[in-house]
Image (cartoon, rainbow, N blue to C red; front, top):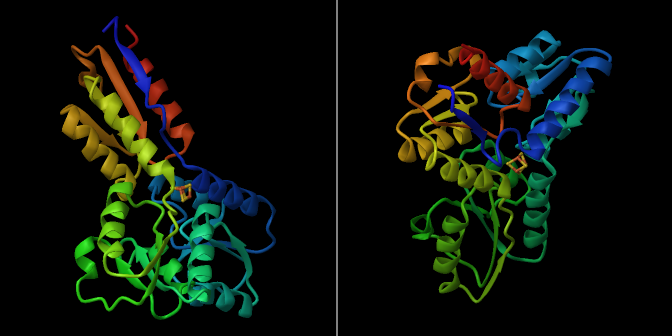
Length: 283
Ligand code: F3S
């Protein structure tokens, strides 16, 4: 295995919004008076959630479960009523909603204020989409494919915002279906490039690598998607949560090992995987 090379994808690991939420949570754990609780898991990464718990940051599913202290709102955001409810209970609210998600909230509010019927391109029931709907009034529709527009009574003025993790191709398909059915169409493209960048660089690396290692929570949708993309191009793809899962036998007859990680995987987990591979390859 003397000539083996290891390459990390050009875009891998935590995105800006998740990193910011993690820093806010770590700071709260150190400095807040009273208990610190996140509403839902802060990120889809069991190791990070465990580390946060050891630092004193608990998790709760609803505001009702939290008696006192600081409540952290995760990067996906929530409906405004949740923040109101927490403040009314006297909780200190630490809003870690990603600024890019906040932009979607503001765009939705503005379109509704200006009289547009709102279409949210996204996955129905996803927490980010629920949060957007909370800023969009009662008449908004969630559309995940052009087919979902069948049977929707469209107004003369239609405004579109997009869940940050949607693909440009899906947005384009929905916008072209809408364009023929309304007079005045306003599209605010709120897609965040972080997801696409991770997928594109994973695909590029997987098409050259002999073995791919994808690091991140098994419960993380974006990490699982990276693993699928890599598996299509590199059959020797392994999705791991922890570097202790890496095995020496994976590298037999291998010239290039590619590594990538989901948007909820801290850089320290990538470093740990690199250190582990180097250790396993020691003669
Ligand atoms: Fe924010 Fe984009 Fe990450 S919207 S949470 S930076 S994927």
